[in-house]
Image 1 (cartoon, one colour):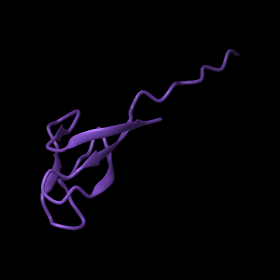
Image 2 (cartoon, helix red, strand yellow):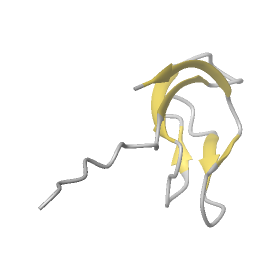
Image 3 (cartoon, rainbow, N blue to C red):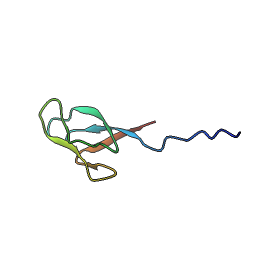
Image 4 (cartoon, rainbow, N blue to C red):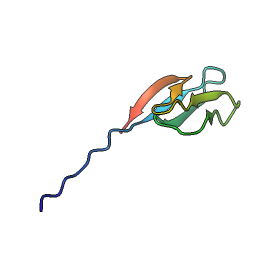
Length: 62
């Protein structure tokens, strides 16, 4: 039996809030609205598959 290792293709992003410049980590396929923990602005909005990011991507995390 051949075992197949499935590579994870989903990513996390470190994003910067456009209002208060707080940086936090967001999953690219977020299923709920992700808000900034400091000011409450929406950073990611679910859109079926990948989330719509409303913040600047600072870094892609693997």
